[in-house]
Structures are given as C-alpha cells and as structure tokens.
Length: 128
Image 1 (cartoon, one colour):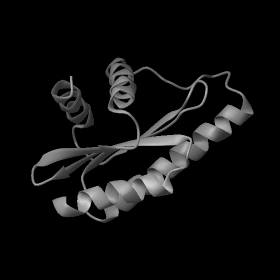
Image 2 (image 1 turned 30 degrees about the vertical axis):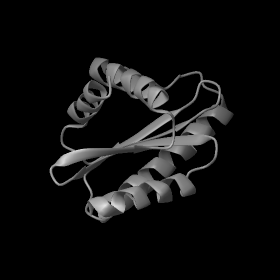
Image 3 (image 1 turned 90 degrees about the horizontal axis):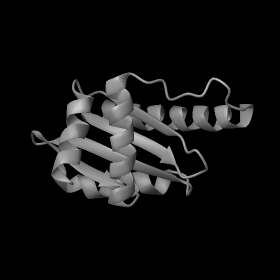
Image 4 (image 1 turned 180 degrees about the vertical axis):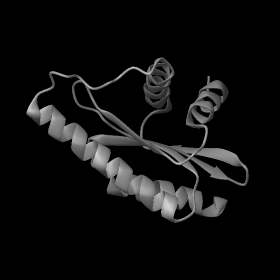
C-alpha cells in the first residue's frame, strides 16, 4: 500500500481544482504519511490555525457571510467529504484537508481517524 501512496497523491492533485490545495495524512503500516499539493510552510500554517481553532472549539463560519462565499465553502466541504469517503471506502485511515487560496480562503476537512487532533499535532511537531 505504501508504494501506491505517491500515485494516490498525484491523483488527488489532478482532481482538485487549480485554486485548491490539499493535505493528506494517511495511516500506512502503523504510521501516518503526508502528502500535499501546497508548500509545506503554507500547509503547516493552515493546519496550525485549524488545530488551534479545533482545540478551542471555535466556529470558523462567519454568520454574516455572503451567499457567494457560502456557496464556495459548501462546494469545498462537499468535495472534501466526497474524496474523504472514497479514501475511507478503500480502507484508509485519513485526516484530509482541502483549502482554497482565495481571499479569506476556506478550509474543509474529513477524518475517520479516532484521534485527528493528535495526528495533526504529531505532523506539526515532526515538520517544525
């Protein structure tokens, strides 16, 4: 399965929209492996912010968001869930993020890992 991981990363990159990035932490052989379509520093910053908000249980949705921003966010969340469920259906344990690069970009995430905060914390610790 680990041999297929680079191919999986290329496939995910090919099916995300050009203005999107992804970060995937997938468990293989007892350890989580990392792939992303964005610069590692950008991914670290994005996941650090996500982790801080998740720990604080902060709602990241703006109650006054415009209909256009709502639609963009909803599309991103739907695509993230679709791809996450496909990975899950193939038997993978994942923490998966999709994000866009627009102004006030959106972040969507999917996980079937029992400990997603710990997985992201470990990733941030080893990539510091």
